[in-house]
Length: 348
Ligand code: SF4
Image 1: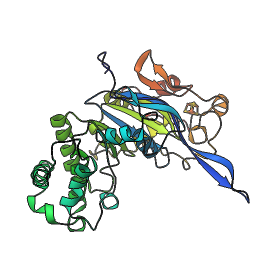
Image 2: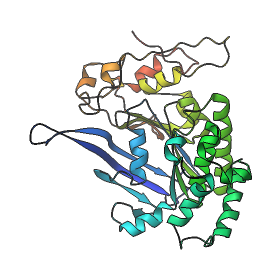
Image 3: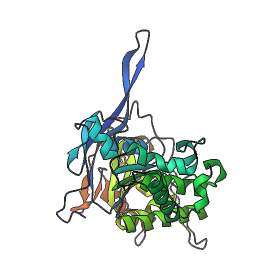
Image 4: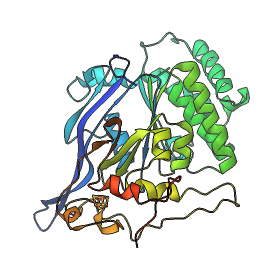
């Protein structure tokens, strides 16, 4: 989806390492390789899904995109401007265009502030950058936003603890969209909610995206949630992207064994349909000392000797640059599957 246009966000070889210090002299003894060389472009109006288990680096990547974590290497360009090289004042102004929705709104909403004050805060921080320059104008706008996200007017004077989880997430969304941003990074926005509430919040996000032409980076550990909302999905493992594809292609033809395992873990709503589940052995290895070669090899049922030494790079599947995988044997593995299904046939 390039259309010859400039991407809204362009990420090139982004790295974020967290140094580890230890010993008597508190020396630098290693790094946590949270994000290790990730590149992608996002165009206005798109939704990009970032998926993977806990510890794969997806939330760190989300924060690095907004420069909440300065990168160790690589670059993030927003509307063609490298956000790591601009003055702090310009970065602050740019934040108006780049907002974040958090997993747990209780942690991100100040419990001592009324909802009205919480929603007024962005307008005060970005004073002079919008037309709501009086208390009255801001109140009218905040009441409009509350209605927009499905909250009653009387929410204005109430406090976060007086609301349910779903309503609190609506407050978080209201705060994120208050200044009409272009990009919203959504960090597991529905993971903490009941399934019935999840779909309400996802529907709200889809409607807001349509009406406000928002661009989403949607972070989730659950592929079924991302399937509903994302145009393109990036599957991450230990700080790297192991597969990228358009949403439908990812579900119909998952090429990486890790993606296949994630898809097989999605519950089948129809109990009469039998689904072979692929259970991954072990936990995600430590990002402090990732396994050599393919980082997935200690858990991969298809691993061969080459996998232990040779780190696979992302490469197109069947010449399709919109579907890329980092596995030496992806085609052979996929072709071992029973015909007519995207369910993988695990070898062990
Ligand atoms: Fe498995 Fe080897 Fe492919 Fe890695 S490169 S996913 S270890 S088969």
